[in-house]
Length: 72
Image (tube, rainbow, N blue to C red):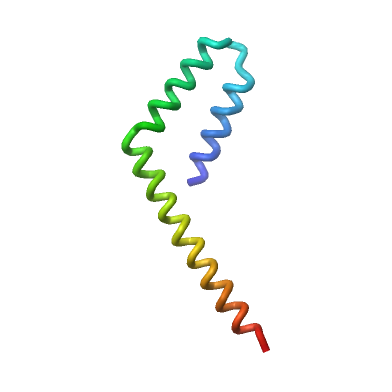
């Protein structure tokens, strides 16, 4: 999962720092749009959302257990 944020940051940095002009920017934008529409990417995004919800729920449960066990 750490690769995706790194790649997004690298892509954003390149786009913001590129001196190739509008044409290159449009090429990058178009490619990013194609990637985002890819069913594999959409599937991975959905799985990540589901996993994030599970992790958040588990963390909340653990925090509740910890809070109740430390209450006198």
